[in-house]
Image (cartoon, rainbow over all chains, first blue to last red; front, top):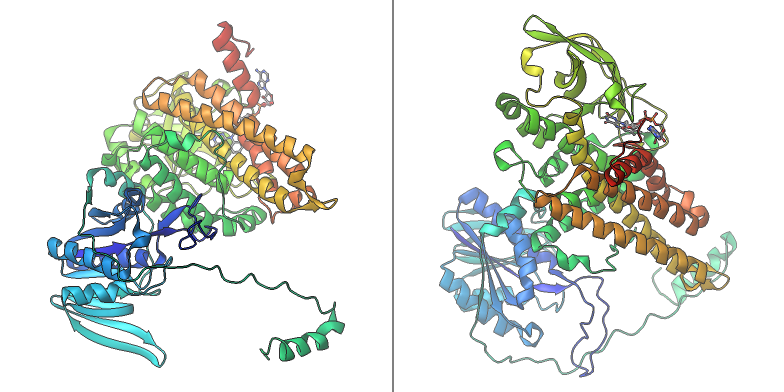
Length: 250
Length: 389
Ligand SMILES: Cc1cc2nc3c(=O)[nH]c(=O)nc-3n(C[C@H](O)[C@H](O)[C@H](O)COP(=O)(O)OP(=O)(O)OC[C@H]3O[C@@H](n4cnc5c(N)ncnc54)[C@H](O)[C@@H]3O)c2cc1C
């Protein structure tokens, strides 16, 4: 089975948010990058699927050449090949443009199942997976926390407000992966050594104009300074009063 | 605990390959997630987390340079060095475990063993199914192992071993001990299996250094071993010393790991700790301490990396390794002591790493050739004159 996992290179959680001079983007000076948290789950699910059903896992990302670091990490964990759809300005892309580019690649690869993260931890759209399925005309299961695939079909579990839902679907399909679906593995030394023999292709993609563009970014207001209501047991009544009256959480 | 930020003042990262960095970062993440949360507990209890052995094996930490046909990953020596650095960033006891298994047990079997010994032991040692130890030091012979009293006598087809070894890392938990003994006057290596009649390995307790590592005595009383337990291809003191060159190379990197942990902890601490209305880091004396330590560590990093590249090119000599081991243990010990001081009372708390490293590094400075012994090795290399006796 041809399996694709889509990943995005995002700033690490330590990256300081500072608005750039244009007022529409963030200043990325000094940032470090990593693969988005949920994408790790997507790649793990792709590798687990290969281990169970056989096949080949291709990791696809839309991003700069430097994303090869994240792609290599997944090759070390057991994915077979990597493709970077080279995009030096991924932050200019809207979800539709991203989904279009990914859909074309998924089709070209002849994949039967695509795993993506529930959401990318930088822009928080949660849109690419569903749009990708729509462009491909495939089944889409969002936010899966459990999955069993067999020839031509699958059963997934999703968590909703009302409880856990079990859904059945036919392949091909796009699955967006949620926390709890699996525990991403670590690369082993042998896995890292095997990366040399694997390829990461850098390719151009059809660049469609974004329909949605960011016009302004504002940082969340700074948190108000705390207030010490007193010390020791004597402060408890004042604290309860403050939690009730001001904070309204009691 | 804050995320570890490795000092890289000289941007030596640019001299590492993508593969080398990936291995380092993978081991670093493992140590942060799996080892550091339990480091204090094991140090206090004087135990080694044996439950982590399969994970260490899975990471590829045991004998990483061993060729794949014997179960290793066949990485280069810089990569192996980075693994040792990251392990010792966790604890010298963790790195000792890994060094003994790889450099002192898998290496002699690989270098001096028969094909049958290699096939039997190396894959199991690589997966951690078998643990090994290396018995060279004796109660009366440490720096001068050539004086050893442990003897082997030919007995029919096999051998009988008698003697005592001391300060043997992992002795009590080892399935196989590489025991060095005198056979017909020449030092030879023997593979002695746990449970062999007359062979016991009681643990040495009450250490205040390398507490999270098992240290044992090996007692050999008329231990009969088969003919196939002799390592056929190594003879004389140069055989165990050949192993020590491997392990000392590892310590050159490992000691840096401990130093880097202390430096990072001290730097973060100095930025946060307020004294006389200012962060410690904003005062001249702490800055001088940090500047001195950072310079020493940077020099040590250059040395380790250079020795690693030489080793990969087959140009590394034991005398060079002596310089690396001696220097990097010294700078690590200095770093730990200076940062311990910088952190005031918190520096003596096991809630922080520095005190644990400081105590551990006393052992690291002593084992695998003391600072003085390496001074004499360098002196001999420089002058051509031996001053050992
Ligand atoms: C925690 C720990 C784990 C260890 N693990 C192992 C192991 O797994 N396997 C193993 O075989 N050994 C192991 N050792 C033993 C270690 O290698 C020896 O302790 C070391 O070689 C020093 O020997 P010694 O303790 O007998 O000191 P000594 O040789 O008695 O030295 C005492 C002092 O004299 C100095 N000195 C010695 N000779 C000279 C000289 N010629 N000129 C000037 N100064 C000199 C030394 O530098 C030192 O300061 C371990 C030790 C420790 C502490």
